[in-house]
Image: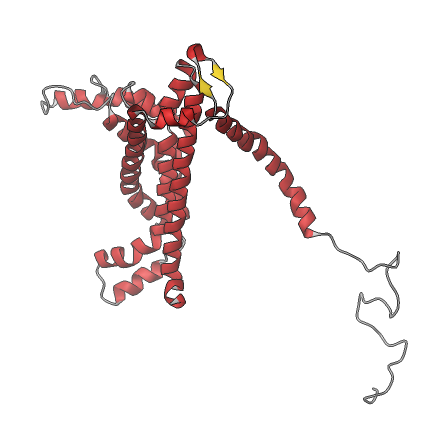
Length: 323
């Protein structure tokens, strides 16, 4: 043991892995570890290139096509003009199509949330040994093509379908109910088709819901309705918002169900884009409608982000702290 101030012997042991004083690694430069930034860029490069070729470039092509002008016979005049945008936005038919698209999205979203919320809440809270089986049954419709399910709904909702035949057989109605070839049938079929997506989105967003919080509220005198309104609903709102965004976006871009169930009488942006591009060969107008649909997507996402931030401020109290 040496006294303070005494010199340390040269042969004194050093911590494991520490090089002797004055020594450097080979090459005379200090050793360097791998650069995390370069590694991250290398890992992100394949996905970024895939997005560039499969998303960014087609999007740029659609925007460029929207700036062209259509000619008779399906010909296209290459130019850079907003004339096609003015033609579409000045036509009342296309505004009606946009309105029906938003109407369909809102109706499908509202009814899907109403029907999917109790199921998602039950699946998130249950401790039954059958939980895995119930989850599989809830998402089982996703294993069947949306086209097949839509044809099934055509057989159910048609004038000679299961619903009308049953009601007429029970003498509850005299004639068939108009459940197909209109907005009603499209909404009914779309709600069933998008319910599994809503259930999955809600369950993934119910992370804040803890049974202890409900029991604590009940122990303080809150009845079941008060617990649902003051505890369960606020804690599950993030999942509800995520499900609403997903269902609304899917409804806006849906083509098969409005085309088949609507019977050519329900005009939405997806069906109108197909008709303009394939039937009328009017690619500039189809591109303009596609751009408008993308704008609607952007508006919906911005509203969703603002609502999500408002919820986060409510839960964390950041707004009150900033004041």
